[in-house]
Image 1: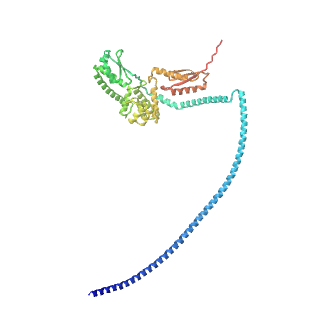
Image 2: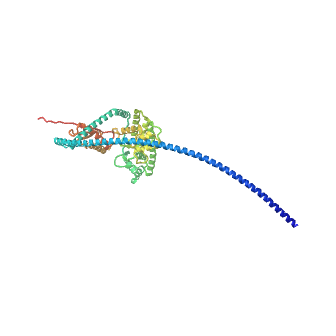
Image 3: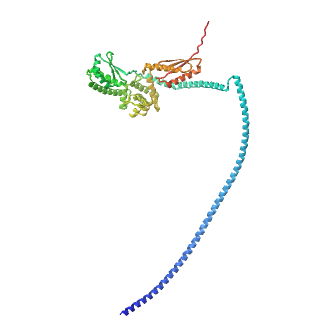
Length: 511
């Protein structure tokens, strides 16, 4: 059994070897065939790539040759242009050389002419010096002295002619420009008439008899001290019969003290507690009167839409004065003047009247300010939504800011008219006398002036000059110089007219 199995295994192994040999032979044949086909395909691809490479090389070579030809052509064109430019530069260089030769020739000729001219100038200078010396010997003055005299004569003649020209220009301007302006101002002043009042810093309170003085003073002066403390007013009780003096720079406080004192004397009950009560009530009532005064003023002037604070400030003007002129009356006068003048000029009379009424509100603020009253009034008007025209007129009526509307100069002019009217403002006697003396002394500082007289309350200055020192042609110049100096150095209301008088007197004695 085992032998049979072994024989079968051997037979299987032999058959497997025979099959493997046959299979190997077939695989080798396929391998050879595949290798032959791969070699043939590789040769074919190699030949195709070589053919393509040759064609690409031929194409690139043709393009390269074409590019080289194009570059050679461009280089040739560039060389041609360079040669042309070189030829042109050579030609220009030749022309420049020729011009340089001509310039050099001209320079040499000019140099010779300059040398010749210098020689002639030297000869002329010598001749001029000789002639100057001869003239100096004949006239007995040096050349410098003669030049100085000529310069002085020319300056004097120029000044005379200039003053004549200035006078003609001023006269022409007065004729052409001032005629209508004067007419408008005069008509405006004539159409507006305002009462004039002078305010003092002192009020007099009249009493029926002197017994009331003791009650006002009170025990050990407690009543009068309480009254002064409550009102801020100095109360002077002296020997003046049936009168008590109230002194204060604030007219509102002075009026409160007067009304409170009147009520206390009428009531008869005078003691510190009663004084404080009456003063408080009086202040409240006066504040209401101030508002009512402002409203009544606006109604009288037909001005509407004012802010309540501005109305109150207008009412406060009733109790304020400037240079002795009541501010409310002054503002009403300026408002009427502005409306009249604006109407004459064809402008908005309502806006002008509004600006005229409010132009001095900066003088009655609730709080003190370091700003000028014109600028403060402008800021108050801007705060309470007044129109820009009105604000500019308020701020510019003393030239603190630039005028931007035609209403502004009207307000400035009408303010000056109201303040410069004769008797409109009170002036301290000492200050008035000093201003008159300063006006006369200012004219006496000029050479040739013998006397100076200020007349018409300082509104005209008459100057007497010596006829030997001041010529007729210098009179206009002297008057102009004095007017300019007065404008620069002095402060005065209105205007000052300068009249220079020159006269020649001849005397003889018959024997």
